[in-house]
Length: 269
Image (tube, rainbow, N blue to C red; front, side):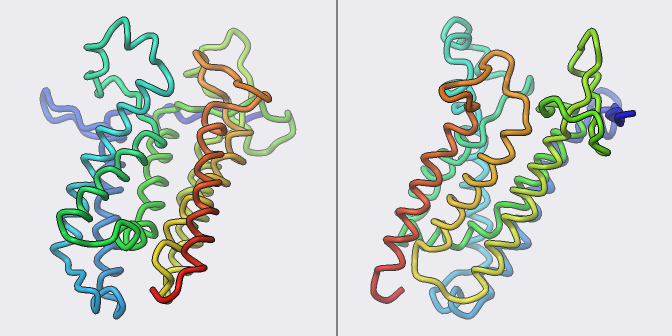
């Protein structure tokens, strides 16, 4: 028999009219983990010698949050439901109803980091190399939120898969055992990617190499884990029977390889 999703209450804490959702808490956890890890990053000798301080980390978080929220929402509107939001433009402001895109959030963070770099007189890849190893734990926290909410479930799983799970949120006439793809993505982008980048960045690297590896690592694991995730019902499969998430990951991998190769051929840091 397959497992059944535990049906967590999405509200973690109710204080009168104020409801604190688990998903909101995962965002707070993501930001807290970023602060802790980024402060460890700036304490490394080569970052400290470059003038990085804890105050920079606080400012990076501020810029990053703006990039994630604005870019993530705009990316969802443009990449996933452009026709709907063209007809209902005010609904694009209803972020409390859900709908965020990682790829849009990434673009938002890139714009925010470009602005930060210009304001501080730093090179763009110097900034992104610092923050890249601090991002995966936040991504993993978000996947925990997805699992608690019982959303973004996986494709149909083999009947004998021990961890196959039924998601009542799917509202299927005949319940289907599915892959718990949120957990797969938690392992891929939250654990594997963190370990890869954190250990790679333990030693000084050429400017741009850590950023390039982030794009390669995230794009590759997202491409693979998407094979186990049910595509959004309003999108289905795209060309070559791939999902929207997979097609958005391809340019990430290509860009990451190009950046890493370019950085590796540069002289000096």
